Length: 97
Image (tube, rainbow, N blue to C red):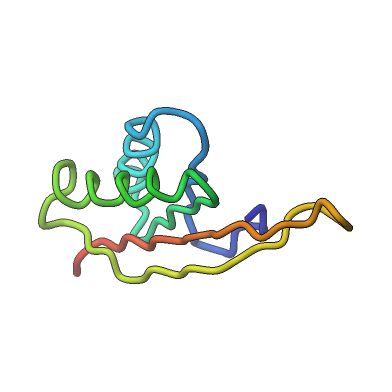
């Protein structure tokens, strides 16, 4: 999940903070001129990332942004006997043309 940002890509990484923190971080990205913001999460934070994307789309930037892409994947975390699979999600929000 800690891949370097590609040019022009704004990323919000979701963790243990309250959902509204990530909603506000996303809205701020759009208010600073971003046309596309990617909300990324893994494990238990996935539901929080989906909630944040929906709140941004339906309450804060209604009729201004759309969810244009959702990518799901699995990451291997740990090594040897401690290795386990963790689900990941990337939700892409884009400003409507």
